[in-house]
Length: 484
Image 1 (cartoon, one colour):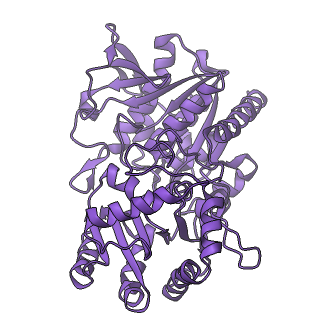
Image 2: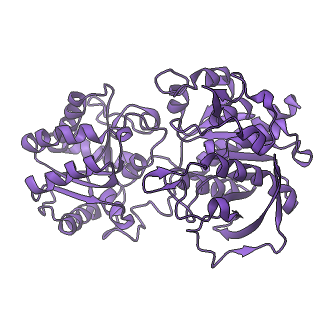
């Protein structure tokens, strides 16, 4: 099977959020099962072109107002071919989505152009995919174009659309239709129109042959008024075609047995190295060196979605009442950054805060902490709770989205679980659950260690995810054939 993945970002070339991590994992895992996968990205100014090669012949992009010419670049990374659309008017900029905290005003133009180019490159390269798999609103026009513009050579190509985050829809002016050559009839409440504008995410939901979300619980949640962000009705309409597939973990990068970024290796059979990692981290970030104290870690964007404002609110009470340490790595809202910095001055040796992103430090925190705090208000899938479990760091999470699907709540009767889960999203529930984890660590140490070993054996493998997507691709081809 031939599959084209279209995305606005993918590591190691362009990354803003978790989307960038997931797309290459899908590509590599499906390739590993014997299929031919290409990934197409915009060629941003920030992408190093040293190891890329370009096609000498310019590529035509068929826009609604006429043709444009772009250049196609390519490279191979870990067995997957990556293609890049060079068009400096839209992508020769410092940022990916924007700069200085502001999104580019013409993002709708930029990514609708990219979506059209992703379709046209198939004809240009004479590589016709069985399935075009688009990700989030940035490539959400692809299913619409495939259905409405009837590109001859792609008439048998099915479309799959993955929702990584429902919060961003890609609202665009009505002129988008003329811009990409889509018919005016689509400006309708039962098509792309919403509140007098074009909603690209809505179009993808209505036109894709199959739709996936990045966890089963998130797939269920987004069909509700609370989590559907205004698109719960279209999602309910397509409910039979909406499938939840949990993201996977790249075990080549995230494994305590062979991680080069941590000071000591360990496994579920021998946890001794984890204690050595804790001592090294405490010394590195300025915490009191004590292997026996409960260390709670956080690695996160500091935004409302992640629930870390609630952590700020209860942190003094936790530190005053519990024998714990707290380490945080992240950046985002300046008010939250300042609030966390404040605690480092008032609880010296017990709180360490690093504002920014540091890949090596993130690995050390995952390997060294005893618990990982992730009280997200919503979480489509989440990756850090999975990394944490594989490193024997027990997550403390709110029961939402992928957190609910991946973390098995501690059962004091069976003495097993892979973390601590709270269901009521409020300060008291969060506080009580941290206290529960703390009590388990100190008073039921045997259970805590058994949970660590159990969590480290969880299956978040790429093959499991790849097989799930292959089934969706097969379903989409059958659905597309019926609709032709």
